[in-house]
Figure (cartoon, rainbow, N blue to C red):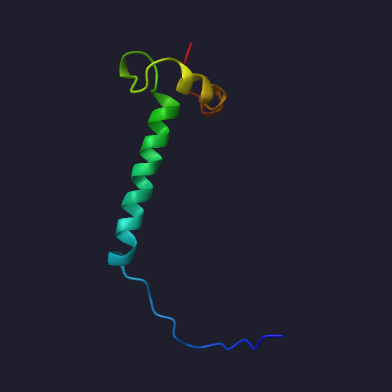
Length: 67
């Protein structure tokens, strides 16, 4: 068996450490919302209907109209 050692080296996390990850997560979330909510028709980035068909059920689940 291994020995477990507990230490009191806990320190608070600063906003400067969290901010880059929060921005990255927000950008990923906005990209996901775009693909689920607006990837069709005139605003389409990917040609064809492949992305639309891939997220079709998710669109209806989240309440985005697509027909």
